[in-house]
Length: 486
Ligand code: NAD
Image 1 (cartoon, rainbow, N blue to C red):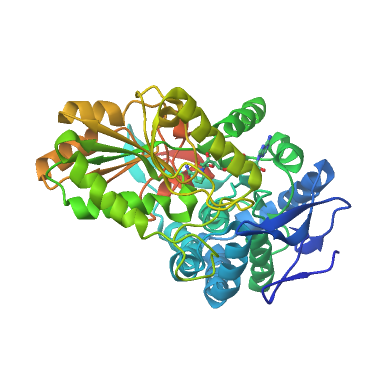
Image 2 (tube, protein in one colour):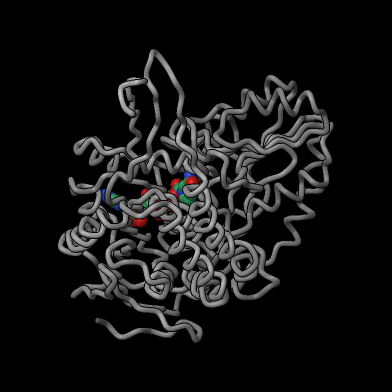
């Protein structure tokens, strides 16, 4: 076991958590603070194929007993974990803000409590499930959910705690032991979660966390034939690699991927609210999969909108994520900064117009100024590909049809945001915009029982509510000839 480290007064283990125990690795990888890159936070255990096998051994051994529990019995553990998350919000928020640079205030008030809610919600949803039953062709029919087996959950570096809890809770509630592999650029909040899993008293092997690189331990996990479900959130290229592994073993696979979502503003909208929400897309440094990164505005309100938008962007403050005044956080890693600046440089070379920003805020930092680009054409790379940073594009349209056509003109389809004051248009355009979730006059409001996922290259499958519980179950139709048994 490696020594625990202190992150702002919180003790964090750099090790894996497998079979109810901390397990070390000979190799490590480092994690640093995005808003102060000189601050190395930890050397974290770098898992390999052996680590993956150990975790799958533990999950496989734990499966029969965990699957044999009823959903309410499993729910006791999930509720206990939710209570512990609530009791440790401060610890989780500070570690996540140091490791990922998400804003501390938002973590404390919304994001971490939502993690607790994920476990509570799935504990209750699985317990309340009523098997569908009906009579047909002289048989009594029932649809039964059977736990599937060990589930591998792979998460990205943005919103790591929230996404891990969102993805692990339905697997556990459905009766599947979990092996969570957090992203290597923000591994630490998962280690705090492991302490809470331990304190909640989960049976050993039910909830395992392995640290390491995607191409190493991640690759070994998704290729193991003992794994019965793979649930992935991350980028399109990685989804293709993991999808091939899932295909090889014929394992159900969900992929929640990137987005290039439109934020459509009609002339009949509350302009101030729309401009404020558009400026809010820079929150978290634009590192939000659902962000409305393509602002598409009706031509007649172009200048009025831009004026309000600039006003709200001027109010943004970059800085330390622990500071309540900060609204735009740092980018996760210098390599990501380079990637985002590459998009901006290529946009300039392409003849796209930089309306504001377009450069590093301060040399040697991971901060890029909030950037607005008016593309030369809809074919520009910066319009068509996900940047995943504080970079928005600005386009205008004449008719509603043109607006919808622009909104639907990329290969992505994760979400969409529409601002309009007209009820008929809200319905019409809401249906027409291509996306797994479309919001009208609001953004990021979510009901956990609703399906969530992408269309096109934004993903495969749906998470949320019963959709995720069904994914993590083997569904069986049981038919008994009526009158044949007494
Ligand atoms: P990524 O694809 O690089 O990595 C995601 C995870 O996959 C990491 O844990 C990584 O270690 C792992 N991984 C990489 N190669 C692997 C392999 N061969 N086998 C197994 N695991 C492997 O993505 P990222 O850069 O961490 O995340 C950013 C992306 O995630 C963006 O595209 C963003 O839009 C997307 N995202 C989507 C959602 C959603 O719900 N749709 C939510 C958040 C982020």
